[in-house]
Length: 461
Length: 133
Image 1 (cartoon, chains in turn cyan, red):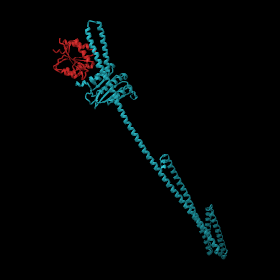
Image 2 (spheres, rainbow over the protein chains, first blue to last red):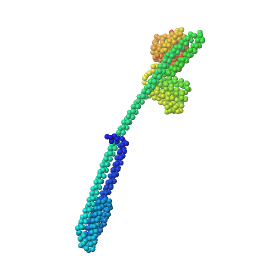
Image 3 (cartoon, rainbow over the protein chains, first blue to last red):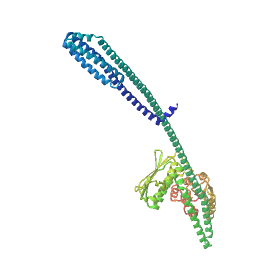
Image 4 (cartoon, rainbow over the protein chains, first blue to last red):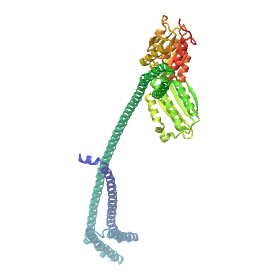
């Protein structure tokens, strides 16, 4: 189906349909005007036939009127005669106009005219003779064989003319029929073409719709796939972050433990030795005692340094005294250092060891930020359990920042967010320039009992 | 003067050895036992046949916590001298330890001399809850 495949394209179908509509209008108009012309022609033919018949009748009427007059001498018959003459003139003038451009009928008409004129002049002569009292001569003319032949000739010619017109009528009728038939066929054909075009159009529309639906389905499928992929990647990223953070804390923990256990023990042992040496040297060697004091001092500074490093690596108070006490210490140290007033509302909450560390680091980071940027006078730190969730908040009345300006990375918030999300929690930052900053974290409450290796506050409870 | 019968709870071998040697050399101290973890320590301390005057407790142990040992030691039927020797003698640790019944808290790094002096005064009967006869 070559036509179908070609017509499938809308750029063919639409002009095709347009052309069909235009053709339909042309055919309809053409046949209409042709029919109108043909009907007018048939009308004219009818008028001509009537005129020929009326001519025949008028000639007979003239003869009848003349004979009536000859027989009765009554003037009424002359009136009929005169009227008939007038009607004959009218008929001829009409037929002359009508046949003006038709060679054959005009010749026939002229013959009729000649015969009629002859006949009428004979009638006129007979009437004059009668009026002059020569009735015998008049009667001769009336009854002459010539007279009868003339009338027959006129009748025959008239009949020929009528037959000619009858032929014209049948030809015109045939033409009309043909025109109407052609119009009918054309209309039917174009209607069929129109229907075909409509069918193609609908088919195409349907195909297009199916195609669109298919495309939509594909797009949706792709979107779903991407969503799943994104969710998957996000989960992976969170897991990875959790892993990295855990590994980092583990590493710090291990380092802190090693420093404490090994280095701390060695330094303490050295100090014990120094104490013993001091006891033995007492009073005997003052210079050596001076060096020993210096040595002990150096040891003390090493110990202090080691302790700072260890404390920074892993807040020992967190495992010893718990989250609340550790946060209190953190806040107190901050207050002592900066002079900023801190309001604490800290309740004991159930959190796993890593989550506690996250909270501690979060508050630590927030306080670092406040120290560096906020220029705050007051700070509020909150820790509470609510509906199975642990809520942590740090708020200050400092300069704040535009949280929409993506400056969050500069404030270490991205790191905080990852830590919190890795623990299955959420972090919200509410900040505006000049209106302080609020960091709010929600973490799921731990369902595990004492995940710590050492939880003194529980052991002591 | 009776030597001060002392029990040491400390997980570091190096410190333990140093502490025993130092205390025994500098003061009239007799170390009667040591432990590396909470459970061993509490078990020994709650044994009525074990006689001791002083318990020196480190907070970080191999397992468990020195705070647990402290609680047990300070609630024994007979009141003993209980001191904490910690690497983390911060204000809070000190406060918490004293609340739990510690007589004194010493910092490992800079209060060793004070501990030795304290032991000497305990042994002389100058202070403390008395010495076991």
